[in-house]
Image (cartoon, rainbow, N blue to C red; front, side):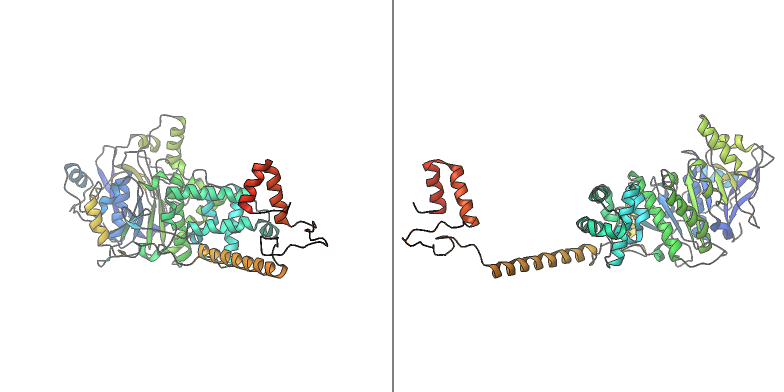
Length: 509
């Protein structure tokens, strides 16, 4: 294939013989794409072929490894009968095996370099999505971020946000007068959500050093794009954290990268696996944000490929912006599945050689209906395509192989240790301590100016006597009244004796 395209495979004639090579032009790699199909139909291999192709062309790639299989892209493949046969069927000659340069990442820091973001970078919209807050609670969170900006409080990790929420609850009346109603129950609900997030591993994700975008847009010494692989098998236990993290990363790319128009090849290709997790139960504001990012990030030179089982998982407003389509087999047993197949068939430019609806339900493993953007940016006619075999290993790396690649990574040592610098938590602690110290000093000053309690034979004071030498029964002090109350409550001569034995003489008889 030419240097300006990625070889995907070969289309087949109705009699299942070779027809022509199918490819994806690099200059349209930033026009986004969609890879769909039922479980076990070959989506992971297709993703690996695409990632290898972009990497070989010098384009960095970021992708999530949901099942662990994608890690094999970092190892050289081996000759296997079914792979050799497929290479011959698609006329891939020579069929060469090679490993792609990879960087392994892991939010939990177990199967790759730790990857982090700060609370401030995440922002109130994504954080509200992450914690599934109500509209009222989201409003309180927006106020919290506003106050942090005004008062110079850095929100880096979870204890920073927790401290700020405590401070807001204490100042609820003052803040409500400035920004609207802030109730302690709403603050408490956010704090409980933070606790749940903390138990799910949020403390490992939020903090510093935060990920630098430049570290996922790298090439090696041979000019190949590095493939950043996010270990997501454990992360998928918290789908909301997974989808929110990927959306945050996409937003960071959009905000930080400069405009480049339509380059000859993308600056980065981003694969969003299990895309339905992003759109499920997403509020309208978030969907609007996703649509905006997908539409505008193309001019930053970033291509986004959504991977999911069903084309219905992606909203129509986003689906309309995905120029490159690879559709693996779908089953049509239920009305919803039949609707999904029809939707998928209708999004392709029809091929008179076959019925697209029927073809989708009859595709074999490793086959896909492929339509990419042609020379003028027009979708090509859909073709039934046998996907080429990958150059890397099909299947996961061993733990030792993974660790070797982690140790040799260009970012080794940059993110291993978490840094806890002065931020909102420390500043609010200092402020609270200062307030406490000032209050104690004021209390001591007040006590010195008014004098202390004075009791006969108790605090060193002298009893006042009347003309005949008896004690004057004037107004009792607080302490005298309290002691007499104890005597009365105990009752009886024994009780009085016990109290006198403990506290001394209370009055003269």
